[in-house]
Length: 114
Length: 116
Image (cartoon, rainbow over all chains, first blue to last red; front, side):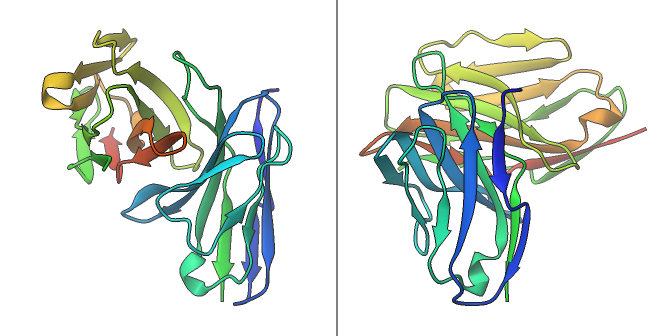
């Protein structure tokens, strides 16, 4: 089954404790992206990647890191989480090309930083 | 700068009514992509439609239709004869080339309540 998986689905952590949220897709998509969803703000792009070893900042990259060492994986790293990073996080992937760019989303990771 | 505006925060209709969700976008790029996504109460995000900037054809898919007008930078979404299962948050999104690749901007979403 074609899908985007994220782990963990729920995470409660404390300020400053480094964490990683994994994202993996099995559709051989070039494009991968991370978003955070907050009430009233819709989804805001954190980072995106057009292909392996190519990453770019979205609108809200501060406090986050990503890497794209393999085509299928795009982990999101919070080196020193703070309470304002409490949010619902989605990973997404898509093909690249004229008839593409529609994104397929993972189930979401709800992160709480205390 | 790119921007997507969904001015309607919440809409409430009675089943079988038609409803239109508005989306206005801004971009200086000549090549861009517009999307609608649905987020039902269960929380997942579901792709509904994509439109390329060079394809202004409107589209109908069952009870759903989309009206893309470059002249007004709008990409509106109409649900005909709404049903309770249409209750969800609907997001309009824009992907356009940024310094590196294609950045994606979402609107704030419109929450649709369809009452039986």
